[in-house]
Length: 99
Image 1 (spheres, helix red, strand yellow):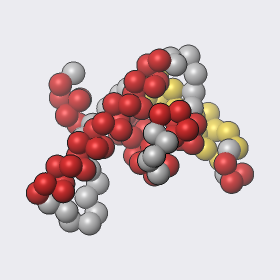
Image 2 (cartoon, helix red, strand yellow):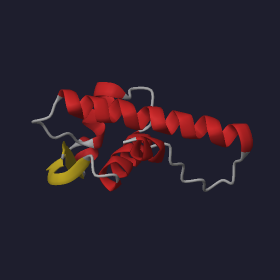
Image 3 (cartoon, helix red, strand yellow):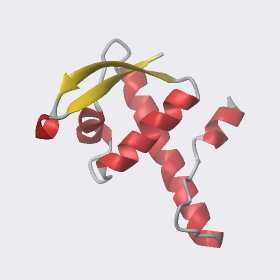
Image 4 (cartoon, helix red, strand yellow):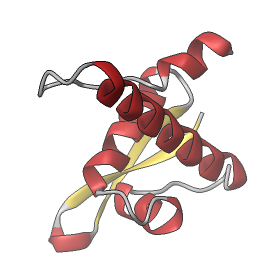
């Protein structure tokens, strides 16, 4: 489990940050993943779109951060991508479910 917990700190470092700034971003990203996973564990029988997750547990984060957390948790085997629904802006969004 520890290996997966550390893997939640992944940063897609497209801007080349380093040092303390990189470490701070890793901590923030890991914290966001943990909060999202905790939300799904509290609601194991429901599926949620990125916008629903944002409203429920990451209000201050942009939806792109929620999508990153969902993608990372899916890669680590905690979540599965499910059905599609029309949501905000009339766009199709997937729902994610606890695996």
